[in-house]
Image (cartoon, rainbow, N blue to C red; front, side, top):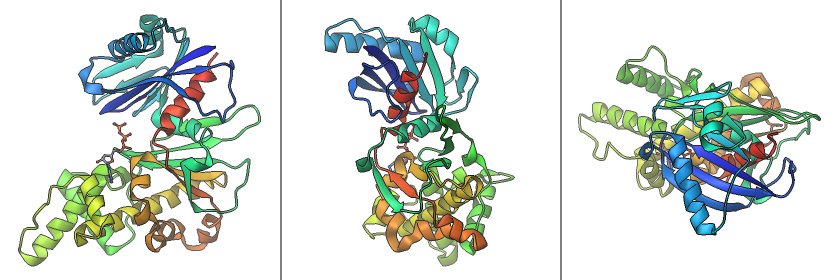
Length: 339
Ligand SMILES: Nc1ncnc2c1ncn2[C@@H]1O[C@H](COP(=O)(O)OP(=O)(O)OP(=O)(O)O)[C@@H](O)[C@H]1O
């Protein structure tokens, strides 16, 4: 029996989990059962080491036995360079060598959170997915992942007989490319408001993006009517709730612009990778606003809107990931494959 420690480390919260596996290298499509799990507020700790120590103490007390994980994988919302990662929001600097020494775990790896999503989708079952477009799946073709949450993650997976290769990217920081007059206005608004020379797609396609789009529409309506709009400071969850129940026209319009931009960016990613192995929408937001993604085929229309290349994109299978644990599942699959 091998004991794995896996973690999903975000700027806000960190979820740690212990997983047991009987096989040395379980199949890549393995969906691990959790032995013990705990959620922490990342900023409550000066570093990952004291958090893991507290977690393992809690697990030993709860399970009433000695627990010594031999492999660990931590998925990090930020770039991982070689064996190191700096979480700028938290002031943590993590290195594999230091973590292995301080935690006494012989084999540790750090991966980007979207690399973890890449591993994780291999472990999902049909119930974890909602298909937006069946397309025409090709077994050996690349698989793409995209996901709006706190930021916008993008990654890809290449299937290979010697083992699948999972890659993260910083695609969310590529330029936002407006397609309609209102989107051009939005781009200019964001440039002016944040004093930016350019606007990245993450500024629009993310939780903060939903808030920014809504504030843009409020300010635009206020300057057209000369009357300030109430409730200008709503969080993304409330804006999408009001859009879903149809109770607030500006919230509805905000989510329409968001879904259009999300679909268009997913289409850009698909043009670059031709992911006939599937394009997966992960991140926390897509599953929560599914009716708005599907309403009037809004997401798919924006996805397909690529001129002469549109027929190619109609063949890409597109699935929304409904399981919010996909990153942790991926971290466990990755940990299990460590030597
Ligand atoms: N119902 C909702 N509709 C739209 N946006 C939402 C909703 N609920 C939460 N959000 C937004 O989603 C973002 C969080 O996304 P997600 O749940 O994917 O977290 P995350 O990116 O994994 O977080 P972390 O970086 O801490 O790991 C926040 O910006 C939040 O405001």
